[in-house]
Amino acid sequence: MSEHQVYEFVVLDRPLTEKQMAELRAISSRAEISASRFWNAYDWGDLKADPAKLMERYFDAHLYSANWGTHRLMLRVPRARIDAKALAEYFGTSAAGMRIAGDSVILDLVSQDEERDYDDESEGSLAALAPLRAELMRGDLRVAYLAWLSAVTCGEVDDEAREPPVPPGLASLTAAQDALIDWLRIDTDLLSAAAATSSQDDDRGAFAAWVAKLPARAKDEWIRRAADDPELALGSELLRAFRARSKPKDASPRRTLGELRAAADAHAEARRRAGQARAEKAKRAEAAAKTKRLDALAKRLVGAWNELEELVAKSSYDAALTLASELRELAMRDGESIAFGERFDGLRKRQQRRRGFFDRWNRASRAAPNR
Image 1 (cartoon, rainbow, N blue to C red):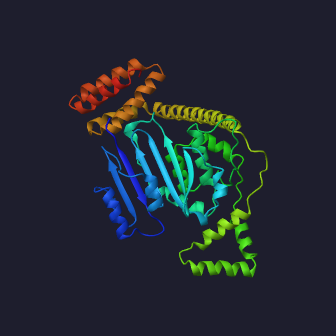
Image 2 (cartoon, one colour):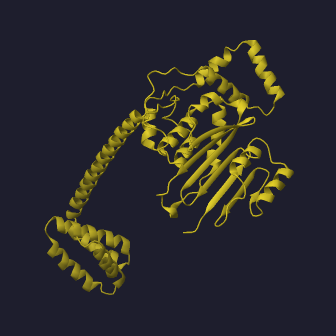
Image 3 (cartoon, rainbow, N blue to C red):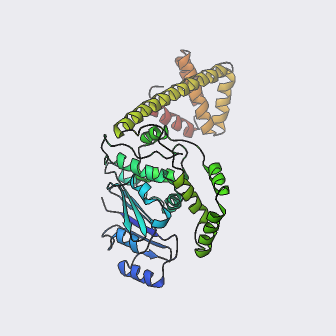
């Protein structure tokens, strides 16, 4: 099996300078490099640089995939625009790492799956995952909880360890968060178990009320910040500040991972049973529909055989095969297989020039020998 690796880096806050692009070109002569993006794929060899160092110096987001099962996502977030202390509770493993780099915080998420089907590897979409960075800057801790679940899925958390605070809204994730679940191969039963204790309150109303009650001095300070930094996403900053001041108190003791796994197992069993019940219901509905269809066919048996002959004569073979199959099923159900065979042989003799139909019938019959 040949190797295949894909590296993608993007900047989100400001374009790369000509000098920076020249520095990157010195690293890779084959890469696609623009003021906002660096991309390269390798079927042999490797990137001649450390992605973590490139993130520190140039980029805001990085996506990596390798056809031996590695997925990696890195996000660089301004330290001043997140609550690093709150985030730290969710990170600290090789699968979900967090480190300070100057004025930035870099999150490093890795998933390994050596048992995957190499032919079906997806290179993922950084465009789909990049909005996670803005969500973090709005104080949305669901991203961080998903990172912790990724470490759990990778087996890097002990069963005795207690889960970090469960953020609200785990049962109604954003599109980017759904993409993160797929990219990191997060156990969805674990997520469902976690979501069972996650508040689903929408905080937009409370946020609007909080802004309305801000003292005039505080509002003036926010306006000054926006004037000093026109690039500041003021709404996101306000929302992060609100969420930092409105952390919900734990309604119950945090579960151990072992307790969370038990809840996930129970959810998986319930999901399995529900799926089995749906399958059985669908099977019964299909059988009832088949019975109804064959009963209707039995009432017009002579007309149906005449219709079959007309379809064969007109070379309408798809419709003819469907009708002939239903006539055979009806005969088998009613114990009239011999009569069916005799009538079909008569059809074959009268329409012997329509070899295309009978060849297709023979192939279909060999593919379904029990019929």
